[in-house]
Length: 250
Image 1 (cartoon, rainbow, N blue to C red):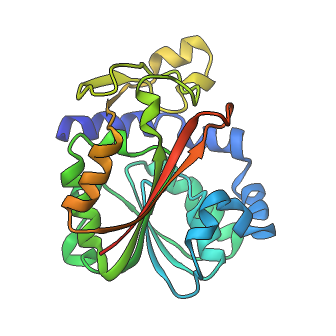
Image 2: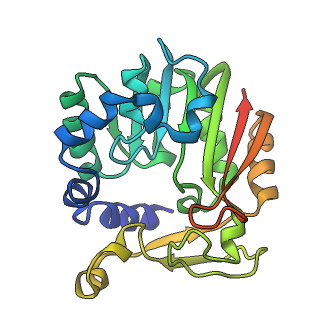
């Protein structure tokens, strides 16, 4: 996995800051949107947070802070764990513009410093398609378990495994047998938004897509009690599943 992490870091530091400015606005512009209605910025995930006031939240692969900053505005104490320095730059500048404080740890998620962070968080939260970057879901969920306090909550929202057999989210990733355990090279999430010449230069990532049962069993196997599993419609076709959210308790 070591080489994969290096590869993923290169991909997620390729022009990422400029990409966020182009697609989400300058940090000041993004901060203004976050401040205007932080709950709205959480979209369908808002209902999974009864109250954010005083919550210690680990935002796994929190990217440019698009969820961490709204959570901080709602009163949470948020730490982002992410592999990209470019993401950190954008997130920290946006947080400053929004008038909130967040912590951003640039690291390999599988090597989070447990001397510092074990048992620290009330909530571990991830969204937007991250599981496929980790090739051993049991190892990954074990780390999520360690980060939480007793009775802490896992909120894991990700691309629906239906995407293994159909590119329903239009991410332009390869499709395969639903039961495939293959690790494959694929473009990082933003590559498709670039001109062809630049697109060719962006480092690839190594992905492993999971089935529903692998995800659920990974959560249960780590020691969690699965409390709820919801499926959400695809962005462009609401007759098909596009994402899911699993809620589990330590």
